[in-house]
Image: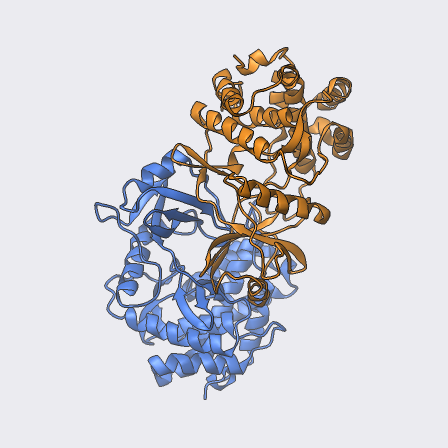
Length: 320
Length: 320
């Protein structure tokens, strides 16, 4: 949950006045999302999400995210579409922060995804990768393998206080992954953070993808590795091959995986687990006093990492 | 901001299935309100607020609040109307907590109310008092003068750490108010917490009142005293008689004040300031670790209390 910035009525009215969306009818802070402040905005013109960009999002990256959502929506992907003001600008300023308004997507996110949800997610992820194929902008993945040693350094000597032996394990992983990280896999636009809370369903139908603020240019199969981590572990902590198979089959029905992508999956999944463990660890150790955001538990991803260390081929993820 | 309870998809669907509101289209936690968990729920049948009652609200009081909103809405007051399920029940259970769904009110709350907003508020408050006149249920004000010594005891010896000399001042106030608290004023349903964030406007028009979870049976003029505190102080901390006059005139245009109500206003306003200072003080001193709610500053109400100590007649509030 995150609403960091208090927006005054005058500021909001001035901001909305630049758009053809009619008068403001309602504006409520949304208790979701961690990186930015989000508001549900209802105007005579419809329902929108207003986002104020707060911290991790670099201002220079915003045009990439905004244009990407526009591109994907135009290609038929169900994702928020940035609203442009009368001068054609989708990016504005509100309370001194960069701000943008996007269309509101109906749907609810699934807290305990089942096999069918994972199948639908696989298909939507492939659709995203295909729709992004002709997107003209590039953004390097700033949270890929090169960044992990720095993240670990930011966690510092307190890591072992979170879990005994954690530092030694991470040091070992960093070396192992640096040596084996796959290069030359098919690249393109990836979402890079497609957790269940970023995927909406209406009934059993996947109705949309949101939150493109980690999107970047990287190996497409890495996106799948992130999703295997985020969607396919059971509540008891064990990996569920039935969900993995459904996701991989759903993906491959839309976009076949190259043999080198299949071979790379275990390393990519192991790296993805380390990446989320490290960012959660840094957040966990650096909760500011008075913080309104509850940090996520890094140990969940430590357990996932330990699982991937036992995996030798994509068959363990259910690949048939 | 407050969303305390995580609602699973299955629980939410089962809950909504009892109502004739169609399928769920969207559900988002709202980062407003302190006492309960609130969700914006969009279904095929419309927009609703779903509330899970969490802490300060006693279960036994919920029928009073629910029936009151129903009564006031039926009398034409713009306030949330509880939605009844197919069996006619407005109060249900969700994740083991009492829960109710009410209609969604458009409007935004005014962060810096002006004279005209205060005038409109006065009129709406009188309308609430008139609409509540024939409401059949009663609920004593559990946060009135008798409760204040107990609240102060809950703050305990740490009060002086918040402001030097605070304890001595409160002890003096408690004795002064216990002796002079007016009895026998016209009674009825009062809102008791009609702060700006509970009053919606569309443009300059007051469009609705929300959050009736402190409503009770008490002196009608006490409600006015709460609003004088909440609406009529300028950002610099000084009382603004122009706003006070607008509020009192707006109120009296709908419901004339009896002479004893006018005479009682300074004592009531002083008591109201102490009441909010004390509840804020207790919250301030008892923030649980990991709390997601930022407590409100008790010192704001200490300053208001000091102002009321200088007031000898309602003329100081702008009464003409």
